[in-house]
Length: 111
Image (cartoon, rainbow, N blue to C red; front, side, top):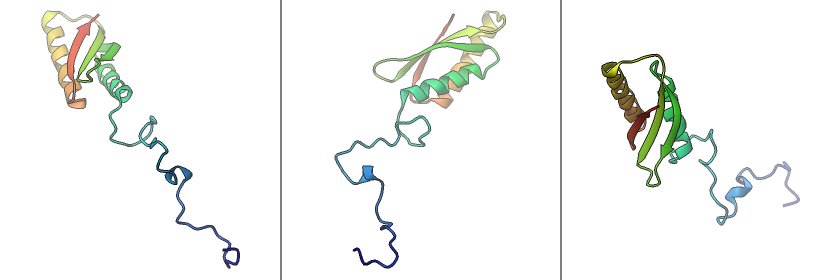
C-alpha cells in the first residue's frame, strides 16, 4: 500500500457515515433535502404559502392532528367579503389546498 505510484487515496471510499451500518440515515431530515419523506413542517409551510398566495385570506395558525390525516387551517379575511363571496372564496381555498396536499382533509376556520 505504501508503494503506490500515484499516492492518491482510493476513490471507492464513501463518506464516513456510509461506513458503519449502525449509524442513522439522516438523509431527508434537512429543510433543503429533496427526498420523498413525509415531513409535517414542510406540509404546513406549503399550506401557509397556498393561503397567503390568495388575495382573500392570510394564514393565522395551521395544525395537523395526531393521526396526520387532518389539517386545521385558521385564516384571516383580507378586505370585506359578504356571505356568498366568502363561501366561494373558502371553497376555492379548499380546492387549492387539496390540490397542493391531497393526503389531508381540511378544516378551514375563519377568524
